[in-house]
Image 1: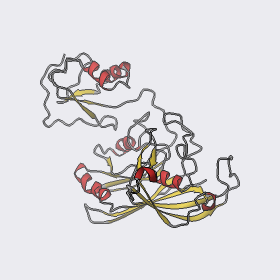
Image 2: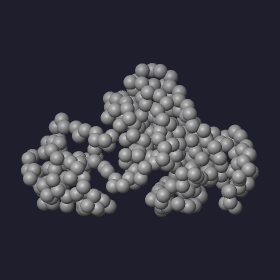
Image 3: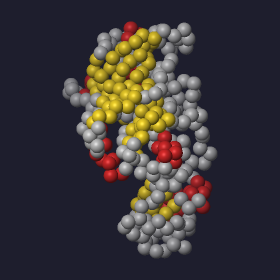
Length: 329
């Protein structure tokens, strides 16, 4: 049994198999043992799963001592635990590193791969794979793109540089360019004329995994917005296999998108609002596939994070990265 006093001093839980620790606080004077506390705190995870993590030494106290399921938490302040997924599905593709130096790693992420552990993926996430591949335990993503989106993700190598890079995103001093495929402009009932700037107020939908735009009635006549994207139609696409079905547009086009803000699903929501939902989008305009359903790898979302540029706050260099991936119909 472990009964020693926990301390929050210098112990830093290490990365294990590319996975960094999560931390949870323990309420004062709790009478629960370790497994009962975690099972109640995270009820979506089965007791059997917690037992397996204990058996693998994946539950630590604040000083780094490995805990047993029955250990008392009376004198503990917080716990470290490591995420793991039993029978985690394996993605049939890998990311590629297109740039690496002492400060940054830039990777091309395939469609369907999450940037960080989440849902049914841990070891298959981009972050965990890169930590293992490059032996960089402090690697951290500076931004996120949707699991369904392919393309560039930039990582900070050193923890001491992370805030300086993230400040660029907070201050909107980074330009990101995406490529998307959707119906040609004339297929939209709104008949948009490009280039254009689309602004709206976005909030979480009643379906938690979606976002939506606030209607004019909900805004009560105000012009408030929290999302902004520059969009241009740059090429019409001829493809003999379209329309795939009656739900697909009769003509397709390629678009460039430059988001000014970074709301979740922003580009997908904005294109849908223009009457031009992205090809392969399973959420907009309607949910065709639940968040937990198996993916159809043959029908990816046609959205690619193609380029990113900024002035490096650490070494002053002008940074410009371009994806090596191509977006096809």
